[in-house]
Image (tube, rainbow over all chains, first blue to last red; front, top):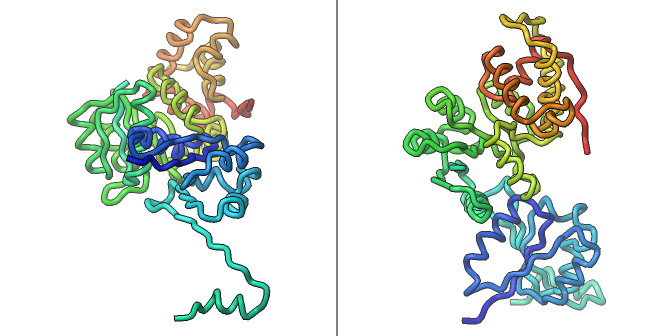
Length: 116
Length: 217
């Protein structure tokens, strides 16, 4: 079975570390790498790993991870799936992106209102 | 240490259980609401219940009261996203052995939980500071202890209220850890409380010691 590469981008929060621990029980399906979101080379390490998905705790993202924000991740890896955990909610937030050329307003409108 | 985990957030609960087991804790059960927590506690007699507050049906604070009444040997540590002072004070008033937030660092969480086995309060220094501040400002009359604390016991209680573990207290007072435990046992008996968190809260509330600013690292 092909294993899907996943990065746990963790600031060592309880939720992220707990999920990482739980996912390690599924290494036949997943190839896991943990990256410390607080490290200055966090983004580089994610880019080198080229994961299909990054899992992070909402509390470990944003200002807590200035070197590896969701925005920076998606700009560098547009096809990346980012999964945000939040202990306040029993749902996860899945963030994906799409990049399109938009040189003119008409391009933008096509993005807003795709034909068909 | 035998642990029961009560949380309706199943993904979070699953992760915590995995983390606890990997760290060597014996997780004897996991449930998703307060009523199930009470039933499981009666059946399994865990050393510690990790209890969420907001859960469907019976919430964690109600379950805490029942467990502390029925099973005094079982410690209950609240593990919640709520940093609401009202919940914190209510939990401590009803005998919680600690109050931890879910955004806590995993390593710190495990270390704090290990301390519960040795009678330490499961609380970060920040939460201890909030507790002390709240208790100090509560409008309570100056109390009178039936059996007053000795000077040594009062010194020790002051350090307990600052959130120091036994080892640090022993170093600070030039005592052995066993002597600290002995004094602490006497303090709990004199104050009629179950654990060190309750002792600190009781002492401040009743004016047995003055509010002492906590120390931060």
